[in-house]
Image (cartoon, rainbow, N blue to C red; front, side):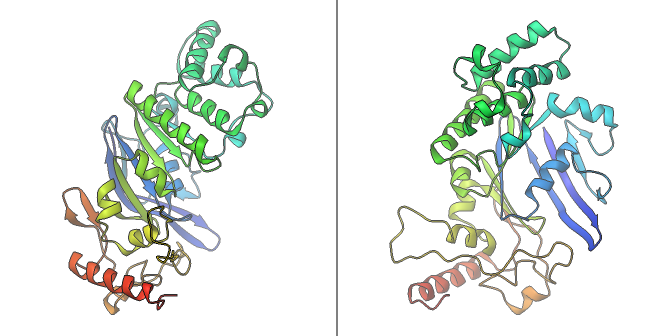
Length: 339
């Protein structure tokens, strides 16, 4: 349904060119959920905005790549055609519902406006559809809440309203940019369950951007791990969580608290800061922070190589070498030799 091919999104700044997305490729099928994970600054949100063509141009530009939606390259279509695709075909849920909803308009007016911008229907028909959408996303007493303002809704309810607006055009692809970040775990679980039920009802493909690996474990079919504007590992949930062969992915998992972990098995954060996207290090971009880096990592910039069916990782270490280094690291960690 959607295929990204060798996409690059660069942004010109007064300090230089930021390579925010650098040669990214993946595809998603109808009814599938892909999670994109990584630290802040890894390029996740810029990738999402690139798909929707929401990055201002200039300063953003695409020196290479294709964004193929049902075979049509969105980088080549007119702004008029893009407006038709946005919302109708591909829709997006933004991170902060309070800043995404207009505080001076009633929720119903904003939802009806979204419906009528995508469909040529009367205001009465749009209101009926708005009530159906609010019911679908679990808003109680939708007839009354239609007349409320955003500040009269809780954070979780505002997020549900945003999901309803995103679904107004019955999109085939739904991009969710960290939709549960500002919510407590109980509401987060409700929002994730809501997205699952909507996907089942409409057959929507979902691209979920998050830094929360717990969310990934609950909802993903496949996972893309981004670092320094690139995909450094991709595979199924079990590949990423149990058979990871990329040190960055393993480091992310190593710093995640686990309820089944021994109390003596302390968390070890990733040292240092993400690489500068204007002046990235030579060789592997993760090598300045990698606990397994070798001299070769200073020279070789690894590309994605297949580690199993559907599982790819960007690392010069073989699976056996990675396993041995990981074992050595764990032994040293238990001895307190790792800081």
